[in-house]
Length: 350
Image (cartoon, rainbow, N blue to C red):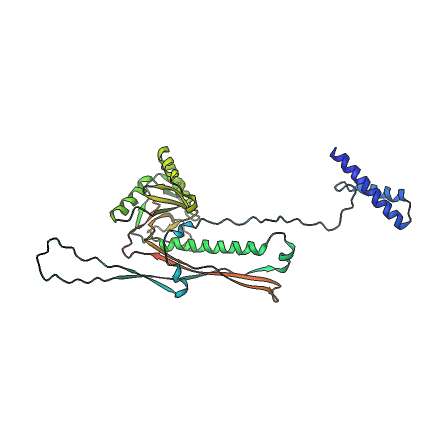
């Protein structure tokens, strides 16, 4: 039925167009209509219509954007954002050792003691994107908003670079770690080879015990794992533990579950350590001996200073015949406490 309707529509189109052409040219109507029908038969892709030499390109109104890691964990820290635009270095005073407490003092005069405070500081880094050019043609020919897409994608890429750097800034030194103790699994970092030990619940228990011994508050404890280590942890849970774990999830705040006092968060990447358990930046070259790591911390044990993204733009640039944009953000962070309590790395063992 569909083909019949198409044929009838084509014939009707040819009769109308052929009649108009015959009237204008003085040629016999039958000859003009017959010629049009013959051409239609030779071009079955569009019955009744002569195709144009230029084919129109179709652009969907929406664009498939890039994928980026979850950076919710950055909010779980002491915020020094207000100081981002007030200087380059942020200082965090730490109270010194408290005074001696004596029961039933009988020696007078009492010895006068002094408290020496310790200063923890960190510098703010400047993150910038490479300038991007949006040709004038892209602003008038594309059905989707390329300018909006570029701005959104570059903002997310900038925040992801900052977040990757924060994991390194908050990562503790080589002495502040717990090794994984599970069965063997293939190394999953991009350059790593060989086997690494999986995450076990007992590993999380060791971290919890250390936090408890150091009087780290029970509330606002967090554990960030990469995607693979998170999957290993789920495999290590019993069915009952798994139900309890997921029942306390808070997706709106990036928490995928709760275990042994820790709000567990998951990200595509967390920490990276070398064989001597020294932390490595994600911008450093990878090695076959790299070990993945997770980060356990209390919200008051780490600090962050994160500014607003600044966009630089030059629209209708006469030299580049388009719009030029680039982005900048200032950010920095550190472990808050000089005694390093309330922060431990969970590092793969070989």
